[in-house]
Image (cartoon, rainbow, N blue to C red; front, side, top):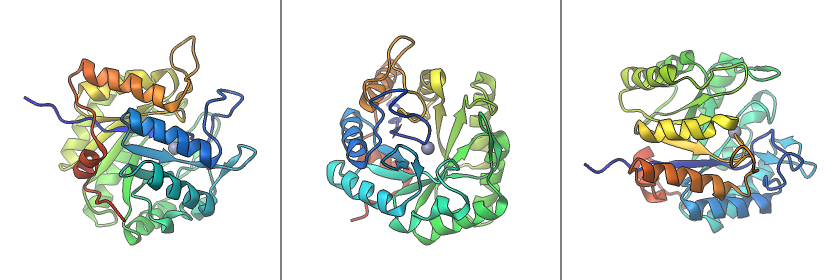
Length: 278
Ligand code: ZN
């Protein structure tokens, strides 16, 4: 039996890693476009984007997101563009100020939890506003589940119409002070999403040294997966990642180990139900 293609998402920059940690982390818009193009050519079909200021500090500037989107559409035609509405890059509604630029997707966290040195705060009011903006602009959310309760909250929002369409849920594991990378919990997450959201597609992201473990578990159990320097700046224990594409290549290798074809951008759009916007 032919196995389902695996969607590889590349999270190129994030809010945390800086050049001091790994000089290959793309920071400027042109570095981000170049890095994404290499990752796209290596097989990534979703790019998860944050933007930074010139001094590497985090930004939520809609103009930067717009420039990035224009470049990505030109150099990575067909790739699914996902903006982060995560909490490290702005406060309150600033986090969704760029949704009017209409990316294909945006991340959406539907509950709160702890991060390594702070609370990752997502109030019910902010979650409802972000999800309504996504509906208004025709953006598909990727639900970030940092905790089991987030899966139930997502199901509730799909059931009562605050969210619409085919759900796509990402299990984020290995963030310090949040859910660890635990195989039994991971399998329970899968069982639970399939029970409470029957038409769901799911993926997983592991942080730091757990990136590879999560990639392997997701690919083995039929899901999709995320890699990239936002979550992990190392190729292995001894070496820093030379590029985002190098991390995508590692993920491709795991796909071949489990005989999973890597999803093309066309297949990714079909699986997720995201038409190509002109
Ligand atoms: Zn992110």
